[in-house]
Length: 129
Image (cartoon, rainbow, N blue to C red; front, side, top):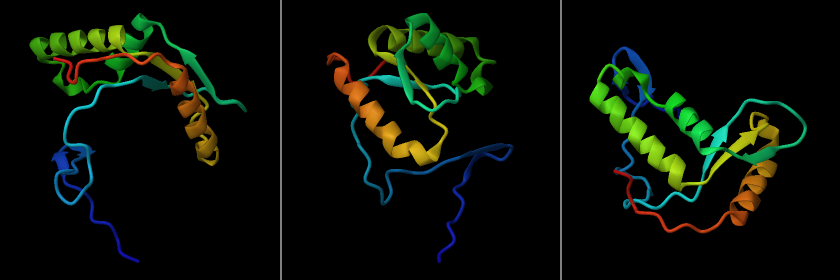
């Protein structure tokens, strides 16, 4: 069995890794519109739950998932807030509960596909600037 070589770090003091998807990978080269954003919530239970998310709640969740190391730069922070605001206003936001049980991954995948099929098709720009 081959042992995977760790990917290079983004910075020496940061444990995030970098994978160059332009080399030997099949990856979408051009931007595609987002159909929905599923926000992962750590609630536990028997049933997988997907609910609509209010725009302001989703905006705050997106900010919470951003890279805070850039927040020392107020211009970048304003740009991120603006982008997240436009995303929250134009893309359906959904809360996904009970996603942590990997044994339920097939059911989770099916639930997301079924939920996504119920959402209206929205024509979006290919990039958010």
